[in-house]
Image 1 (tube, rainbow, N blue to C red):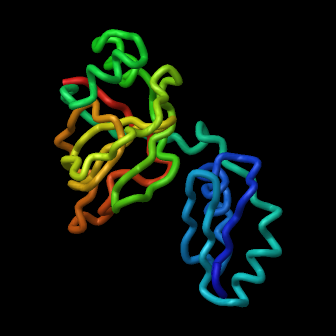
Image 2 (cartoon, rainbow, N blue to C red):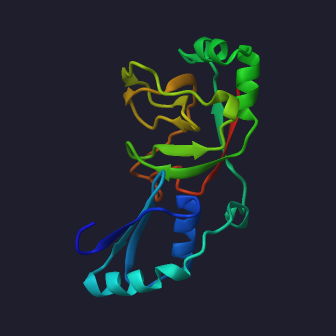
Length: 196
């Protein structure tokens, strides 16, 4: 990935867990570690650092999510009134009340971030709710929309196009460039949805 970065593929662990293990080793010269759905990008300060990191990658061990789950999860209050709520319930053959209960039941973990600043792909969605993205994406999804697609749930941090199924909305601000940590979600963040 250029003269100062590596793309790690064919991992035998979850990319977010492996990336945490790499960060914990604190190798000198690593400037960024970016987990994705199936890969991890490792950015180094220069060619020498890249060479050293490449030689030491075999010592990286994925961190068990329970070992990094200190503290309380981020709670996202949700008003479940999304445009797709009834359609999703019908598609998976459950009531709207059961859909809401199943969406709120798990504790999610941010697997990786992408698409737009502050957009976290949350792992932990009930398998009964796994649905492909909408056949036709919307041209504009409102900020704060709580949605599902494939095996993930997410919260849209700003208005944008999107093809996920909209279940509801939250008032929590997902991304604010004026905060010390602009993105509310980082890889590894634990998340709970609560119906309001």
